[in-house]
Length: 112
Image (cartoon, rainbow, N blue to C red; front, side, top):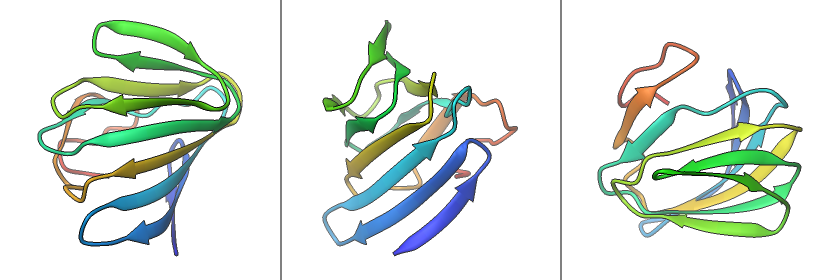
């Protein structure tokens, strides 16, 4: 297991295989991940605890515990926490193919 502090909270990497990567995202209330898309990576997000907003393509929706969303490659997305938020993410292994469209923390394409 690997724990990585982020400006918005932290990532807990609980699985890395040839086929998938599993992470827990802990997003602090009031913080947001970058508005981004992935060139090839497919992600599934399970919102486990807390409340937030998910931008998915052209939609913006409130998310609640035990809701899951699959994000296809090329789909822009962003998670914003309205309360402390815990999200389980499972994705294919193309972990460095992020294209950041907007980032509150000054990160650029390919940076995590």
